[in-house]
Length: 270
Length: 349
Picture 1 (cartoon, rainbow over the protein chains, first blue to last red):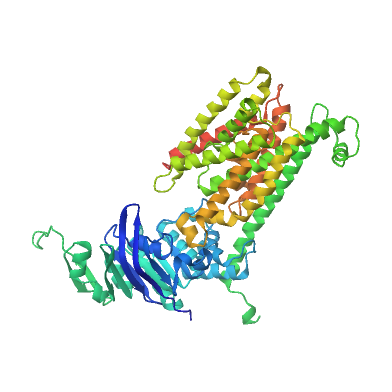
Picture 2 (picture 1 turned 90 degrees about the vertical axis):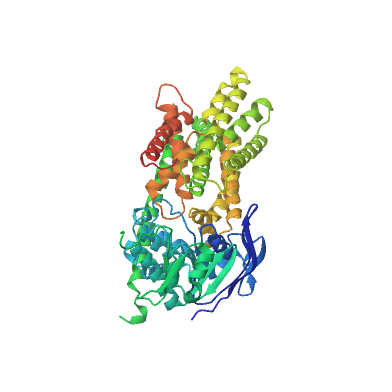
């Protein structure tokens, strides 16, 4: 079992230049669970994720991991506890899958130390978990979008962190690959107890996979909790400015949002 | 077979693949080293009077050999050693920039850093009448200033490779015209020097030229080697590198200062030997593969290029050409090829 880590944001204010994106936000991430952050475009979801992984310094307030401010934790030490998969990481030209995944090992390696057996084992386990072992010796630039995304997740897995943050891990993927990636993350959460925090665009996928849903609006947490409590017509109205119906997904039993657009052809007209 | 000792097949597979890439790298490095040694030996032996290996060895070991002691010991040896040191410096400095900025065109000799160091060195020698270490200092300050300038000029919500390359090419053109202007002020009899600051030359190399370049390599080489792992992580983008535990700003400053230091010291000794920084990294990657740090392979390719180009420039044609003319003739087609390829794939520069 891995230790339960607590990650919190207290009175967090974030922004770029004269623009305040996140304003006095309070958030507690439930340990060992899968949390999805949703919200309208440019509401500050990704900004919040960047601050939680300390890529962005807060204007005021703080992000606290296990009682310590993340901005006070040495970079390398933090990288052994908390991993982040950014939205658009860049694969170097011609690098093989195994070598790229191996870079996830760097926070565990001492300067000038040799590659160890444990490193090989971690890379192999990450490749197996993401079902990319047969791609190990292929060049990353030859892969399809879905394969590539699985390889990036494998790199984050090789980092062996108890917390994993992902910024829109399903963007640019078709529906089959979206499900594949989210199933993988759910599995990881279940089998290893990894705390997963991801920014997701698709409300219904978020509701289906997340134990804990966080809706952001106006720079603050509008509502947070289990999907049933958060994904309501009232919240969707407030967060996205869209009228909708919420029904129960017959397969998963989770809430399913159906937007009501302005154009509403009657069934007869169609 | 007992269960605890048996390795999981996945781990064995990963270890095997890595061992294969490592073996390829090691073999390629041995070949490159042998090639470098052979070219070095050739540049000591071949000339208007050629000497056999045993005479050359005698000179290197400090024994008196009539005729050879002067020709090999005083002329060829410092020239060849300077070729090795500048070639390695350009190779390492070039590949550091190319890797960090993820763009083969982002080499210091394309984006104006070498031009800056060269213009400053020419200015310091011709106009200010400086010499020796003072010239190197002026060159490195100018190299860093140019780096900072193109960084600031191309900064808009982060630095995009293409913008930096285009601005750098403009800056390089401007600085080259400064060099041409300075040389216009130089007396006629210093035309030899003019070639050095425009394309790079090893003519008249002496032990006095060797010392500062060697010192720069001794200081900045290990510094860069220590940052090699961070360099390979910065390639993934700043966010990913930072998430993997790299202090990105600190690593970048160290890498830039060390790479510019190498380029500037080499430039103040031999001029901006054309395209060596630009060519070494890509050739090394072709030969050695993408496994492991690119620094040592690029150093080996760089020094072999300079040694070979200097031999060709001196003896392959009726007249003697400075080394930079030969490397320039090699590099220009590759530059055109890169731009054509970028155009075809619809990619950016």
